[in-house]
Amino acid sequence: MKFSKIALLLSTIGLLSACGSNDDSSNIETGKFNLGVSDNPADAEKVMIAFKQVVLKNDAGSISFDVSDDGELKQVDLLKFQGSAVETLVSGQDVTVGEYQMCIYMENSEVVNPDSSYVQKMDGATAGLTTNSNGSCGGVGADDDNTGRLFFNKTFTIAAGNNSFVAEFDLQKGLQGPKGNKNYWTLKPTSVQLVNTADVGAIAGSVPAALIAECEAKAATFGSSEFSSAVYLYPEATALDNMDDFRDAAGELTKVAPIAAARVNPVVDDNGQVISNDYEFGFVVANNYSLGYTCTTQHDDPELPNTPEDYPAFFLHVAEQNVIVINGETTERDF
Image (cartoon, rainbow, N blue to C red):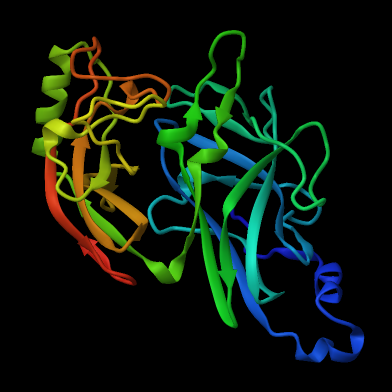
């Protein structure tokens, strides 16, 4: 399936008229607003989100963008947009310069619906997907019962010129599988962050097949029979022994929580032979970082502590230090 790169503007009149009368509207300074979505992936085959609309708000009012495709919800499989790959929700819309907050609305679906939001696991099993937040954004927003809201509380600036932002979903941190009497997946609103593409760089590299095999052999002794490789991103100078898992609760004082995770994907040649195993973090704020590699991502439950002492175990196998990210550049780092 190919996804449309066009987003339709529903209404800018309310916001613009709130900033001045018709006589002086020509003096209003605007900037181009662009919004895309990308993903740091979880252990799933497909994570489909059916987007409805994007709303910007400030003290002057709200502005809404319909992101549907010809009247149909805009379905985006986030796992098709890993690393620096981005699917566009809003493109080239004139917005009055200033400070804003943003809401993104998606359709919640507690049952499997191929036209809505859902998750497909590696084994092919599917279940519905919801987010547990709702409500309006400055008095504007989808009010249907099956609508979920992703709210970005932190303000951001739209300046004169071109402004490109990415809503990056960290599914390893915020995508929760069915539990208890819930037979659907849940997406935490806090697992999405808004980044300005002018303020970030990227990290990309590969993991040798021999290292992956070494990790899987170790994991097998700890009870694993299936494996899922990923690279975890940590703050500067985080030693391997101090690298923690994703969890809701705080870890030990010596442990450091990961910032994000990126799946390790096999790259094949024209004959279908795997020639490398690559990873990429697409939107990383310029700084110094550490990296940890694991083949046991499937055992990292974002709600619970997961350690090498568990059975099956979660552990980071090897680490890389002094990974320096520069704005607008891609830092290459192989394990």
